[in-house]
Length: 390
Ligand SMILES: [Fe+2]
Ligand SMILES: [Fe+2]
Image 1 (cartoon, rainbow, N blue to C red):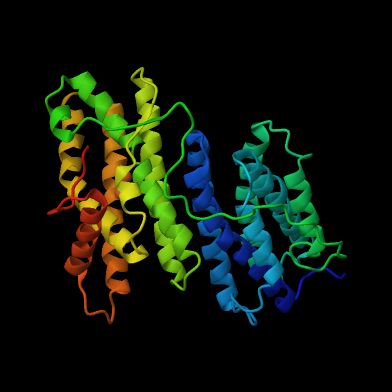
Image 2 (spheres, rainbow, N blue to C red):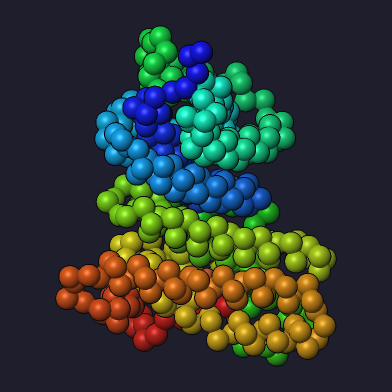
């Protein structure tokens, strides 16, 4: 008889889920840069995009609800919890904290809501939470498949105790005592993208030298450049990390979450195709990412979308046709997906550079000039144009 959760309580729960998801974007972006295994980086990128969709669905529903202001009365304890999850002391501690503790609490809370909800009265929420739950369970299954022995670490104990201390995600459970904060908890945006020992950092073949190679070797070198799109994903991870703490419209983070995921996928295309061609991915040249570390969000967006992606664009159609005429349909397939995605990326760049330059005395050319001035300082030599060494 008592089924159903009223609007105010539902709005409060959705707001908590919204907020946890929104902060998860920052956490996943930060750990994308820091986590050493590149296969796990790909997973984090897929999960970040899932999470960005969850934020959009939750915000849409909150916008329709009485008492649905998404930013009203988020408990400071939830903010602290997410700072703690971000500040994990090691790669495996991060996985244990994020997937083992936080996500399991989220899955349990959402399931408990759905069980209490009325299939007609709460139909809107059941629909959204059901979809979120499906994604979270598939992420959890991936984490479980790693077979880590994660339950008994000090870090996991700390986070579990913290969740109990704040009375669960909604603050409505009985509260336990506050755990002692572990020492040295802090996380700042990494200025380098980390990899494990399988990946060497170093230069790639230039476009000109690839163009004069015989076909098979040129294709391998080309997919090494795909694998290297980690540099673009890293640049966007930095943008998402920083933008999470600033007052940008959600639509900007949503677009760049998508862009970020696309670049991680393009790198994944590289790893898949290299293996098919009998070659293990083994090299990254992160220079374009590292040189941009000190630039503001606007400049990094303009540099990538209106500088670098515009620079690479003329190669895309040409490459697609070369694979077609040589009958390499598998390479052509990946080149096709990449080309199509790139058109969107330039579109995102146009839209958000224009938005961010509203009421500014500068235009795009001024921003790109400021980028070149920055690069000249970093490289200690004049920079006339935006280009890439590969
Ligand atoms: Fe790309
Ligand atoms: Fe792109």
